[in-house]
Every structure is written in C-alpha cells, then in structure tokens.
Image (cartoon, one colour):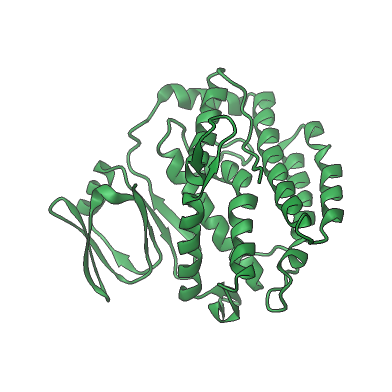
Length: 330
C-alpha cells in the first residue's frame, strides 16, 4: 500500500536514479518512489525541476505546510485523468443554480448528520450533549428551505456553533477549554487542533480528487472563484466531524496530546513539532482504519470512503445516480 510521507526536517529532495532521495539533518534517505502516495512538507525543503518532473511522471502530489502547520499550497501534477466531459458536467451543475443548490444542500446534510452521529456516540457514553442534539435537529429541518448558498452556509455555521458548544462536555479537561471557533491564529489549544486537523483533511481530499476525473477547482457549496481549489473544501465538510473531531477527542482522552505539545506563537496558540508528529501519526492510522461498508458488505478504509464519495459525485454529475453523502454509523 502506498504511503503518505511527512517531512518535518529541513533538507533537500532530489531524484536519484529511479527513486526519491532526501538529504536532511538526520542523514540521507532513499524513499522507494513506488511506495509514495503523496508528500506533505512542513520543514524548509529545497527541490529542483527534475524532482518535480519525476513526481509528475509518478503522479505524486506535493503539499506544503509551513512550520506552524498552515497550508501553503500544493504541487498538483498534470492531471492524468483529465476529462473535458467531466469539467463540462461540473460547470453545468455549478452554473445551473437549482442543481448547484441541490448538491450544496446534500453536502451540508451529510456534514450535519455526521455531527449528530458524533454527539449521539458520546451521549450514549454518558456525556450530556442531548440539548445540542435537539437544537441541531431543529435547525437541520431548515436545510431544505435554503435557496441561496450564503443562507445555507450561514445555517451550517449556526449548526456548527451549537455542535462546538458540546466540545467542553466531551473533552472535559481543564487544560483544553474551548471558547468558540477562532483561527489564524488559533487562540486556544482546541482551535489549534481543529485548524491543523482541517488542513489535513483538505489535503487528503485533494489527493483523492486527483485520482478521479473531477476538477478540484469547481466546488458547489464553496463559491468557485479565483481560489485554486474548492471541491476539496466541499467534500471535507462531510468528513470533518467523523475524522478530525473524533481523532481530537480520542487523542485527548488517551492523554496522547498534553499542554506541553503546544506553544504561544504568532499571537496565538499552535502545536509544536512533537505535537504535530503525534497528530499526523494517528491521522494516518485513522485514514487506514477500516469499517464495514453497508452497501459493499466488506471492510473499507476511511481514505477509500473519501474516494468513493468522489465517485458518487461523478455518477451524480453524469446523471447515473443521485448523490447521497456518507453518514457514519458506529
């Protein structure tokens, strides 16, 4: 199985014969190129055109995050599955407002359903979050009535705010108090974890889009404009609760992340390198985790489920089958 390579050290990437070679502070390392799915770089790394050409040839995406865990950009190689037909279908569904709204509502319904599944999971384990469940259920009834993406996103924001208000009850740790969502820079440790986790899910979805015929530049819930990518932001909404938030709760419940894994920087609170390494190690394990898929009747990894979500969207755009977002059932 191909792997995601995370690079925290400074150094230099090169093509060496027919493989990848990294020269860093911890020495020189050869990385068998056939084992690499994508590379995520945190450190100060230099590379040359020959290296990028090789990655393009091997269809490997390169994501850059800065030392603080913020997304910088991606090297998105020439798309080997480029499809004029699919671009036209995406554009058609985007430009037809009713069709765009239909997909946008389905994405929000998927995201909200997964938020509810997370809350129900912890409610069944003695966490008093029933009030938030009832409030979200009441607001979710309004999703179908939204006829503008701005209204839909505002409603989704209100629902997410209620959802976040349950975090302190679920986490229940004095060193990890959550006082509402803030970002750039995060003002507390929970916000730092959410921002970092969301960045990882955006890049994971972008890498999976690359394996399909879809164009990452044309989203539906998020307005397609001069931003490089938007479709990954759409699909990531569905998976944030069950992948990012559940991972945060799990890491804190097991005391794997502690106060010492954070530091004050850039007028905010950020995870330090040790904290980020713990997070990405468990993030990869989460993506590899398999669950029994109801329709397929066999075990499927969460990373594969992200890809399947994109295939479902392709079928919807081609008029073969209506898109139904993935909703987790534990």
